[in-house]
Amino acid sequence: MAELLGLGITHYPPLLGAPDAFANLLRIIMTSDLVPEKMKQVENWPGEMQQEYESEVQKAAEHQERHIKALAEVRRRIDDFNPDAVIMFGDDQYENFKEDVIPPFNIYCMDSFHSRPFEMLKMLGDPPNIWGVDSGFAYDVAGNGILGRSLAHAIIESDCPIAYSYKYANHDHLSHAFANACVYLDWDQKGWPYPIIPISVNCYGTGVIKSRGGFSHLLDKRPMALRDPYLDAQAPAGPTPRSCFNVGQALRDALEHRDERIVVMASSGWSHAFLVEKHSYLYPDREFDAARVSELRNGDQANWASLTNNEVESAGSQEFKNWICLAGVFPERQAQVIEYLDTWIFNSQKCFAVFES
Ligand SMILES: [Fe+2]
Image (tube, rainbow, N blue to C red; front, side, top):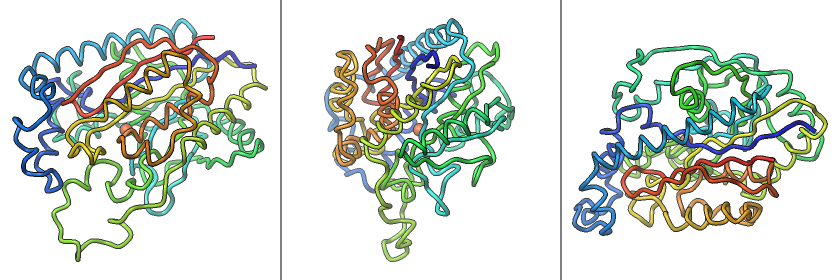
């Protein structure tokens, strides 16, 4: 059996920029016609949300600081473990996979991943990144195509169909879930020496096309008559929590016949405000995520397989599916929660955890 280390982190895109822009997404969302006028008035927000917004600058600085500390701890665990490869579950948000094909899961079998990690900031108004690196900066992250191909074969042979790819489809650079993880885990810019094997998950499911994998659904001002019956309508379901868990299990079984040292990681935030209709898209479903982190602390992550797509999507916790895949790899391990960031105004809940043997 391969030696395995499990990890979960966030790939929160605003973290690429300065903390004073963390709440910009909230301000962008407030321009949406889908947010009721009443909820555009700060005095109508929940009291705790108003308080957080009043001390936004201080809260944003703390939010950044806690991210940096947690990421440094995760990086330390990875360096101590010294893996041969890092397998990452991450959402593809209408990036590499679009109308021509949206695979529920896809494993990349590539030796090199061209990456332009700061492209993502364009969606957020293109603020400068905090490292002062040119926004067009490009580099290549090493992969391990042969290991990826062997794992794809073993997973498919274990009755768990998974797509695989030897090159990018629609994108010419690494999707943000993986690109951000590589940047954040190299915060001090000392280098990222570990080959990666990304596994994309269609977390956004029914919204992946109509929201263009983000929050386009909130900013569409066109009348219904001008909308496309396919592109602007609900897409078929994304993979169920049970199938996410099963993919994790199949990956674990595939790794059983190997002898490498492997990190298996989930890269994603949890509930995202811009997906939570019942909260007027302004704040995340903190209760849903609180229940999940409590299960994680209790070693009950196998319960996540029993969630439904409806429960996950109504909580705006679509990206949590990456963590359900991770739970399938480590259903019996006791996680250590390194950090849990609970927020009203910075769009998404974040968790950092490690599953040691
Ligand atoms: Fe994401």
